Length: 245
Length: 245
DNA sequence: ATACGTCACATAACAATGTTACGTAAAACT
DNA sequence: AGTTTTACGTAACATTGTTATGTGACGTAT
Image 1 (spheres, rainbow over the protein chains, first blue to last red):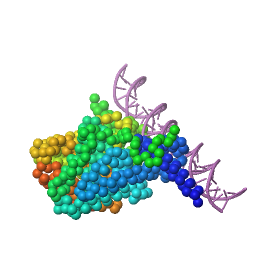
Image 2 (image 1 turned 180 degrees about the vertical axis):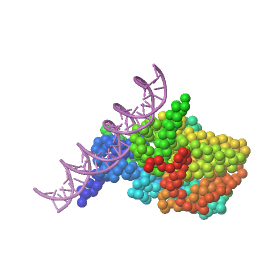
Image 3 (image 1 turned 30 degrees about the horizontal axis):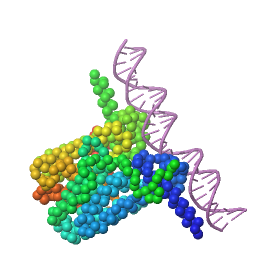
Image 4 (image 1 turned 30 degrees about the vertical axis):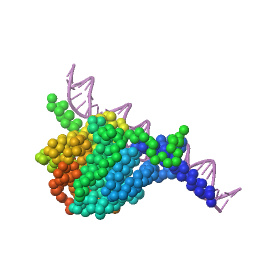
């Protein structure tokens, strides 16, 4: 029965329409600052229409984040193909930071927003993308450990992975939250990643060697201005233009 | 004129009363989840009373955080008295993590909550406590650098300080936001701090030496459960009991 | 001592929000 | 053709932060 298919397709299309409007607004102004009425108006519907497709505002946001998170996972997977496990660790770090600073609002919603106490709803879903990526990191650490990369005292791969995650997470978090504090003279993310990740790897390594130098892009020492993401060219699947005319 | 003094004293007392009620509620349930009406009810006043002493809800929260932040500054200052600059870095890290995990809500409000766009109000105040503490860190790094602690390639004290901050910040952030994710098997903060900060220092050091071993308290590998701060015994100055009977 | 002024605070209202009860009309299924 | 489903709009509701307005206590000046 093809009609059912078409119905489902139309339903998904409208769902995507809502998601797209929500994405633009959420990424532009953050979760709290966006109202459901505004999202609905943008696509010329009443607010009730949103509730047909999503349980509530938070659900809408989570679904959106989940969609875009695929991009993150893909980026990490690509980085995960690098061959020697030690070099892979560097690539993973770079991919992580790049994603976070390119889509700071997403990162914020994923890793910087505490669960409201009623989040038993999807106790697994949330954080799971992060957890999955973390498993990748653990696996890489274990492989590197088998290669004898780390100092022999360091036997707990999970602890090492958590420490590495903390390092990169801290880096991007500071940029996202405090990146635009004026008199702070932030060093560039590339510089900091090299100092932080490089020194950390050196300190973890049995041979005292750091990371191979990362490919530099920016001439360093420019404020990141990550908080207001000016580039709204992100992950727009399907049509890429605003839909409300 | 002693009357004016008394009036001012009474005013401050009431202000403190509001702050105290707000503190309990904010720390218990977070900023968004607490209503002004609830705060007011707790001290048996109308909501308007709050506006006599504070500009708005956000102002109330900021004043509260500012108060408690003195504790943080004090803890850092104490740690800052340690003599060799290199050891001081370790102490600062420990003090930082201890504060953050003891008052996770405060930390959250300070360093994990993005500025709402209208924060030009006190563009300096916010973040300033963090900045001050950061200056302390920079100074320490500079001193250690003068002592020849770091590898000679590392000349940018500010970059090093930012990297170190990122590391500890990332550690506590992960604990606060994701500390209670079930199947994650977090290592203890002490363990992670030792791996992270120890390895980072080792990697930064010219002589490849790490940090002196940190004093251990917990037997390691216990989930921190930092998010729901069960201990509400914090910084209560004045009377320490609930006021609403 | 009496009048005046100030100010902390309460009452009640307002506007904006997320959410829902209810109706409706179109379209699918029988 | 009749029945049912369902996507959606209208209008309402409860809860929020915030404010306009009144008032009573109290300090101060006459």
